[in-house]
Image (cartoon, rainbow, N blue to C red; front, side):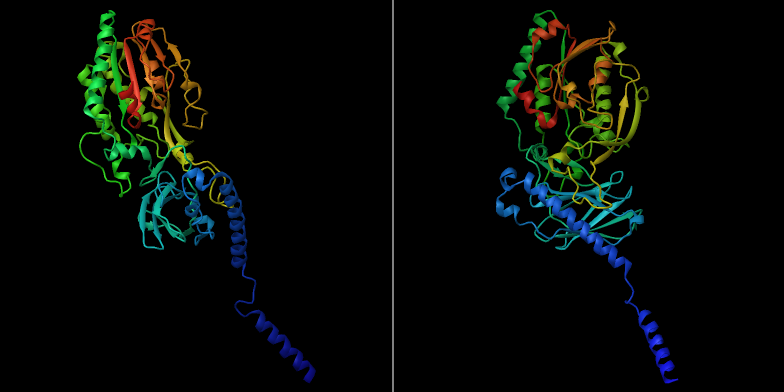
Length: 462
């Protein structure tokens, strides 16, 4: 009896111990440990890539600056996968000591970020992508929370950031609400690059001489200049607060004044862009330095509203004439310049993918042969072919002919111009040589200059 009682008591005690909280295997703990191992593996791979591709010498930073990064880089999220967690894809310095996080979130989300040193940043997302710029120091931890319609969506993401060094091709500034800018545009924004009176007078004299030579040759060719306002001019409210906008005329405006004084036709797009900057379609890409096809359409309308005064048949087509379509496309030359080509984490849930941007594109309703603008269908990046000089003829004698002198901003408007012309000769991209012989050869009614504001120096020099 005593033996049986002992066995019963032992069995009961064993059952009680097995039911005690904490004695079971904690599934969530196992998942957390596995995830931590995955992140550590991803970080090791990423750190190896960085050490091979970037250095203090390449980026202009001292080895001491580069080595001040925290060696403990980690990412945590308190929200389950089904809650659409914030996905941090990239983190790079833009202008030291500032860095920018780029990632994915819910559509229409507002991202609020708080750092361990008290910085608070709020940024509106753009079709499921976001950016957050913060001042980085060693050990900075950033807590990200997304809100939709004022309500928190899911949990928080905590990121112990170790920003990558940017590339050296072009400097970039990360603005508010997923808007990026070329850093060289800051000179226009703060009026650091104003030409002196002598240079402006020289430009006026040079253009006057060209117009006189055209008239002396018995031609009626008109010179038209379009200096496209840069993104920083269109969206000054998105510029980081430490950069203060100056007052007075910009370099672009001073150059336009000098051209008008010479007798050239100048199209100022700043007003029309201001009227349409809050349309559904954007004037500039968020992550690419170029104007969008919608902005090019607005410029095309302004251009041919002028040309139709001489050639009524060249009146611009309206918006609905074109086949507009939208979706996620590979854009982002500025993200490439920020060295955001490989995601921070190559782990489950954080995929090795290109940064995408939602945008709108258009096709002509009629065929214009000889125009291959995009590198491939899913890209907004212009093709190599479009940079070459080429001639497009539509064989419509009631339309004018023209020569187009351009930088890369000529890409988005290439087919629009050709579609309203009898003959269009596109001079090689970035070749700004003025050639009276070409005007005679192609019997050009117009010479159209299309350059970006940040490239306006070429107008002064050519």
